[in-house]
Image 1 (spheres, rainbow, N blue to C red):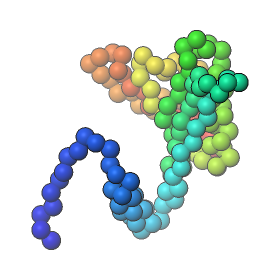
Image 2: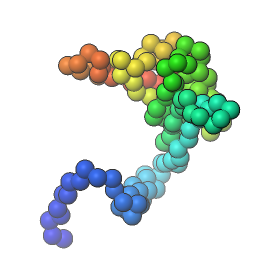
Image 3: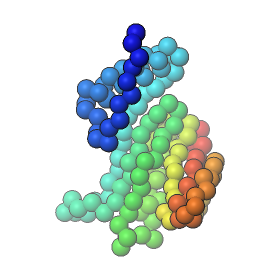
Length: 142
């Protein structure tokens, strides 16, 4: 085989390119006998007019449920909506029989909130900018 080129792009991959990469990964996962079941989930905070005021997005990967994003409109913070969204995600993860729920957050976001609701810090990545200190959290479910 000739030398392969490495091509850079700052654009989103096409669906076809993503499918090729997924197929390569799936073939390797099958060879390693791991359960790579992947899926994405969300819970949205809506009013009676269907306006979104926050939500949580997450994904299943292997034995964990990864929180990708949690946000609540600033006017509604402090009213337990963040906690309620996390609890819904935890319930869902338990129904899927997953071992962990994981997430990352930055210093200016909500590390104290996650600790308050039972998440444990696994790792902290320091940054030159103190606001960008990154926290890696997990919570054992089973």
